[in-house]
Image 1: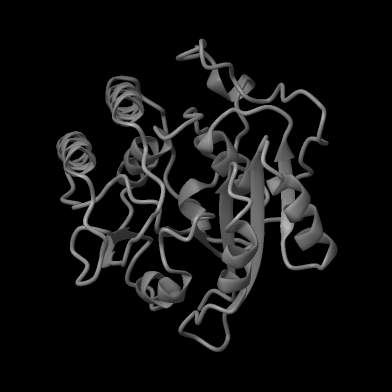
Image 2 (image 1 turned 90 degrees about the horizontal axis):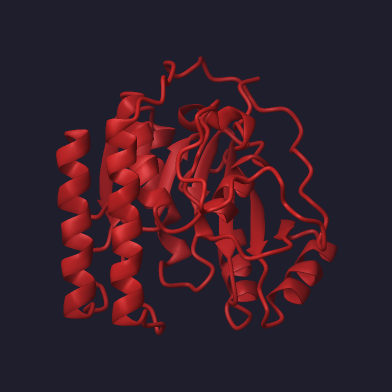
Length: 282
């Protein structure tokens, strides 16, 4: 059984909830006594005091923290966090507490038992959840249907933030999405590598509302990424046998410019491995 779970938390402007989110992840029941945890938080150039809260958490030894000196996007923050993990399983946690960390054991069980490589936490099959806005629900359903058609799976919530997966399934990958389109890219990656995918219900509640025009712009970005993943071959190799990753890669110092990330205008570099970080193979 894997022994280390790496919680990764991409965050931007969540000063009111980030400390509680880390505390709740720290005390969440993982379902197995022999599972240990590490917490990795990457701040995407927050401007509301989140960075100072994270420095305090890091000083207390509660989390390993990285900073983006400029706002790039949720996908870029997740990619940076994945390059820092040293565990056997990755759990993506939410900095705004929209997803309940106490349900982590539900996500981990199929992986820890050896039955799954990837587990999605679905908001739309849960017995208890906040009722979403109609347009948000329609957008999520549309994106899920398109992703399912392109990847030949039958998920009910591809855009969920609650995900858990073996670190092996992303090893050696080059993730191109900077923003919310990371959801579609990860779905394509998981299916290309023939992962065993499970789906479990998770509760969901949020106080934040994305403006309707912003929500549909996010949806367009995800559709674009899904099409790119389908039409452009990644030449992905099979998942390597599981081996623990070496020590974490250092993160750019706050104030430095990130040059390892492709600019948003560079939609599809001919040689992405030269411009995007590759999640280490050894």
